[in-house]
Amino acid sequence: MALSYGLWCLSLIGICGIHRVYNRKPFTGMLWLVTFGLCGIGQLVDLLLIPGLVETSNRQLAPAASSVAAVSTIPIDRQLLRLARASGERGFTINDALLELDLPPHVDSTGVNKEIEKLLGAHLLDVGNDERGRVVYREP
Image 1 (cartoon, rainbow, N blue to C red):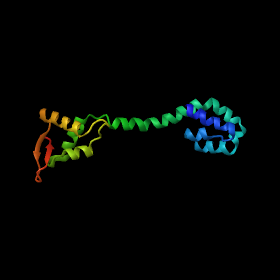
Image 2 (image 1 turned 30 degrees about the horizontal axis):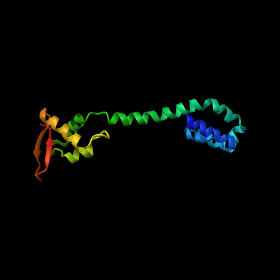
Image 3 (image 1 turned 90 degrees about the vertical axis):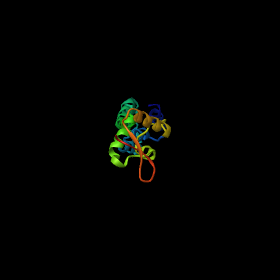
Image 4 (image 1 turned 135 degrees about the vertical axis):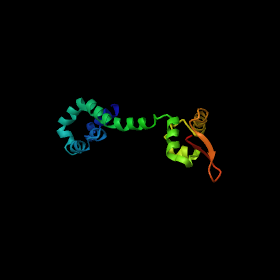
């Protein structure tokens, strides 16, 4: 919100409407720019409307952020089991898992290996080799 008020202050030197463009109102922002904030009246009214503009702009961004969070909240073990089911008889390798899983930023190949070991210990995955000799994991 402070940045919007800072951009509003540009109207004091004749650059009006930039705060509207920043808050995803480009048409009215350009209108304010070419009419000097509707002769200053629109600029003064916007001084009171900035909190609502910022809230509306942030609300438009919220669904995109929540969908990203929803994708990464599936536990790694469930993602591995889904990968095993999708891979069928050919199974999957560690490399396949690293490429296919939506991992949190702090999880690397060591974390994936630990999850696979847990699933092997719980007899939810089987380990074997494919025709090329690679270690593959399959559904039991």
